[in-house]
Image (tube, rainbow, N blue to C red; front, side, top):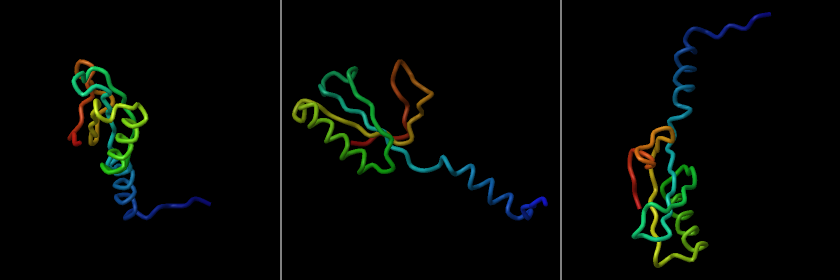
Length: 94
């Protein structure tokens, strides 16, 4: 017995498969020394900017660099594309 998906469901199935990767994706970048951005820790991903911010502040506290460090959260970063070791993101927020 063969099951056939009605022809109207094919476009919906295609849209759902394509949008599986459309969700917001945030990645965190913590800089232990805010004056030296070459040294950093990358972590994530997160589904929201707020979750990234909380994790970044927690990491700064864990590293004991709250006063000397900094962080950024990148939105929809391209992990496969790097320019001189820098990850490219659609948007970067603090």
